Image 1: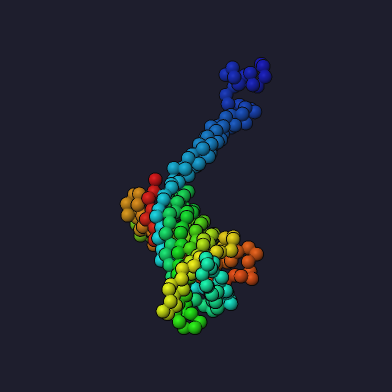
Image 2: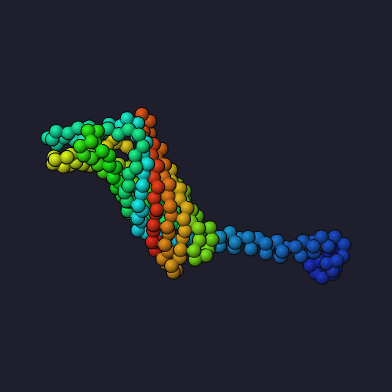
Length: 253
């Protein structure tokens, strides 16, 4: 007679005889299990490739007019004399200054609508006040290099869509200039050294993204930036808020 297995493989019994039904049932399930495993493996392999295929880089020139409101708390600036007779500059209370920010940005998009960006922005601003003796004006011209790190979101795939940004900004101050204009006296142009160390800012923006064609897009964003100060510099911190209109022409590749 032989064992059931031998009888099955020799054809003496059919798959529906006796205990061979269980074996037969497992053979019917095996192709289904194998297919599921195959599909899952292929999908796991393709997902990273799809993500890479959707990723893209873009670069853009950046420009923005900037208006800054700074609250000074009895701040005294001591310019370099360079052999001249100079006076310290007293700043107390709220002041508005205006300027411009120019530079370049690079952006990495890893999924439709989502990107991170960074770059280098040069900022120049001018603050002007009347002298205490009312005999002229004192102008403070500040310069800095700004390094942003932003998370950006484009909320739709339409040609014109909302565009949101949030992130942080490191502001590295550079040597400033002080211009003293007294009545009936020569204009003094003085240098002002800055304290070492960067300032840290929080930044948020909401505007529009307009897709010009497949590679070029125009981004316009009103921005607000708040100065958190520098580490360990709470005693000399002057709270300030920047309002700007960031404009970028992006090229994707």
